[in-house]
Length: 390
Image 1 (spheres, helix red, strand yellow):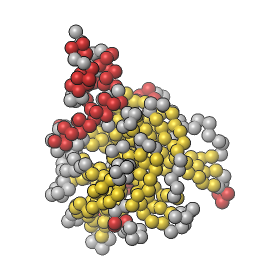
Image 2 (cartoon, helix red, strand yellow):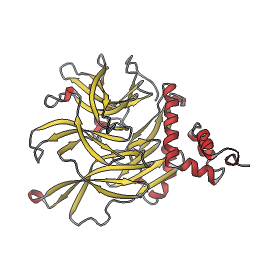
Image 3 (cartoon, helix red, strand yellow):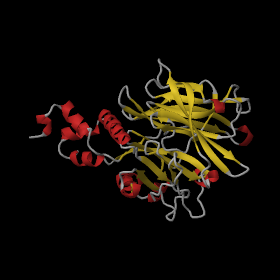
Image 4 (cartoon, one colour):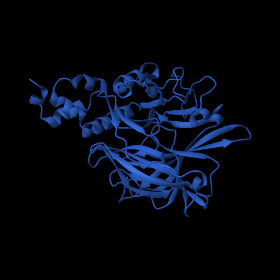
């Protein structure tokens, strides 16, 4: 007798949501009923949240990392891994698993696999991008890779398009994964070219793209290096240069652009105080720190070639739209200066904030180090001790 005949479906779903991904993968083949439960978007969200809380109690939030290839050559392959305290040596390589699940899309052109890079991870689902305008979603729990249809297969000739920003999110109102992106469209040549920017969103349920109403300000948005890159509780966030005029030559101020995946509306909000008075000398980006939406300022001292990191977090969200930050507070400084960190960039937090990941400057700019690799540095933010996991 199937367990679904013994337990009501909601009870069975509650039991399954407590299991590991590996266990779910094994149980998925037991029956069509079990498979339908495990594959539901709402179950994926619930399972991800429960596993997150369980990992949080253990002080370990796994982090998906990528090392994409700069030149897509055999000697410089792409690598993907999961960083977690509960794994042997702290890391599990997933490159072979990904290759297995997406191989049908790269049949006859395996070199494209080395162009894959991670565009975000939400509820256990990974967004990939390759060859400029191609996207895919990978769910390693069910070994499924979905190729995303091209937004506009019949775009006008002599018009070039470039993806400027990219973000994966989850709409809790309808249990739906969505992808937000902006595209710069360039037509004409040399001095006669024109540039326009459009925004569009992909819905997994509808399996289609649609245009969005653009933000009202002229913006220059940052694509952060971090894998978590600004997604937090149903919304996406970008660090933004805000031009009150029509062009990038006009005076600018600094803010944060938010996008609510439920309402599909952009809003511009204030950045923390260090970004208020003109262009800050420090670099800044967004990430999730523990249960906070955080802004990380990288403050470099060019005289002694050191740097430290200032962490600011949201302490109040809007009551009407809980994705809009209203105020910030300074949390702590990661320092004194980390040895050798002047040439490194913030990559992200892991292990529920107990790991600080930094990458070399050249890796952020898409170049290889002399060793031909992008080697990450791992630190405990409190003790600044090396965390040897590789």
